[in-house]
Length: 198
Image 1 (cartoon, rainbow, N blue to C red):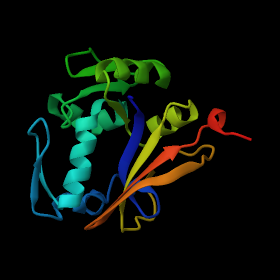
Image 2 (cartoon, rainbow, N blue to C red):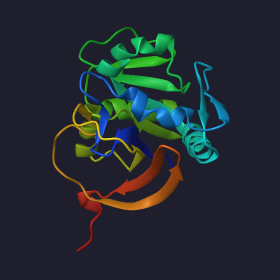
Image 3 (cartoon, rainbow, N blue to C red):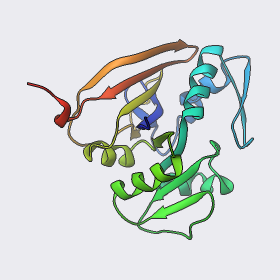
């Protein structure tokens, strides 16, 4: 069954980027920590992963059918030059929508609307969510099924947190733990209030 997940490379202290969008060289050092050449579906880039990271990341890419991201990330990456490297349809939640095209849909509405559109594009595959404010909105709306952490052994000391501030949640797991060079891949299920039993 299709799931909604959020995931990111994150520091030990919970940041997906350092102050002023720094620290990416440390957060993504695991992209060049192995001998397995791994080319993104669009061919936009090739990274060199360990066998463990390649199996994990390859499985996640194959299972993902669409993404939801915020306009800040879209602008920061210059719209990935026309298509997200994962090669899937990307829904951009924004107050400043652009014209839709074959690779992007722009939604000036709620996170529920954005996820619903992404689900249609994903079919029976999963929907991945940008970390930060998008992840927080979706978590608070009860839309997130699982959280993937690529936990990197670095302390950034500040920056952009994986989740924007908000209320806390309990997680189940870890459902899986994959140890690799420069990273530990973790997966958790989200416990929603309506699924708890007395």
